[in-house]
Length: 474
Ligand code: URP
Ligand code: ZN
Ligand code: ZN
Ligand code: ZN
Image (cartoon, rainbow, N blue to C red; front, top):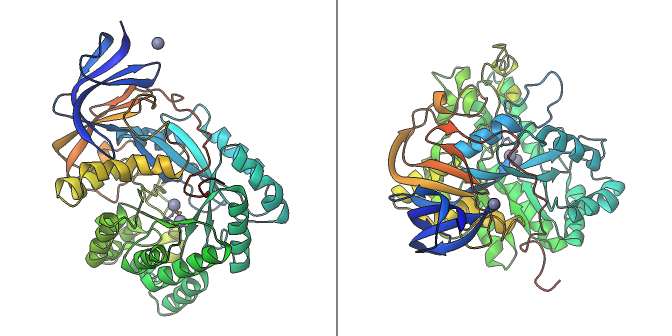
């Protein structure tokens, strides 16, 4: 046969075009897109389905180290990547965190150990810099960027992660020097501490008050500060997990000034609200929705759509950061029941990211299917140095493909999830549009609810420098 596999009769969708075509695959790559392509060992009938690039989720947390005595992350690479392919995502970029006082290089090795042979999908790593010592910024970080870890995240909050303004400037300057893309978690540490203590003194400790401890002004202030620091140093930055209008408008303002400030948003900001954190009559079940920045309100959903439609946001990521609600021992959430301060921040979502955006975006007529592909795959690949290997359906790309039924109505249910977390914050949500089959480098790894791939199918991806971080011609 001419090819190993042909996907026949589907509608190919890229960030630019929609057209009827067959897709021929050999040695894990797309070799031809068109009609009358030849013979193949296997033909898959894709009629009635959309043939789209497998999702690239550039913001997931898997097997992330948590201090002893604090809730541990529910998903490692095995269950997290299984959940990814079940949702149509074929590449994840997870985080390798530098614990304070540790070497960045050693930390990266630890995360490789956790991922090696354990992943159902391809994966890369962003670094998280928590301790920007002269050695880290002068030697370790530039060397790691050269080795394919071409982006890193910094935090403006969290006790064990926060950087002060001077440190942010030093890190930004280092990124400028080595052409890395910096992702910034924009929430103000001092404001959150102040509000948290005030709420606790008033006895307001239910999960709902997590939202009140970090309102949009706290996110907006930090976003503005990060943008100002980026302007001072003259380096592009990516503002991750933007929750609503206040921060969104800071990014839009910066772009209108000509600054290269990019934006990411997530399913929780178009599908959840602060009221979800009320749980059942302000009980602890509201903890299932605690993430940072927190979900806001319906007006914020509209602001996020406005930002999506007008190009403020390049990427739609899950920020999959799964913790157990009860956990295997039933006690994972015990401390969280005493105050929102102890509820681990983060929710699972890698499996539902594409279905939520497709349903609310494409099926409800807010965005085109091409914008959907850009927001879930192509832009992530371009932004994070995986293009033209990942992120499109064209000759030469890896055959990472999702066959998508645009008309299928489904209900999101925990019992159908492939993650290890013991709940989904999207329980009961009705969606239109669903992944039917996922192919990783030409191999069907998921079909109709069943995992066909094997753990270890996924490979590590060393990434190129982001064209969005470097200047053309530099
Ligand atoms: O609450 C969240 N988003 N936890 C994940 C860590 C982060 O800040 O992205
Ligand atoms: Zn072959
Ligand atoms: Zn963050
Ligand atoms: Zn995150």
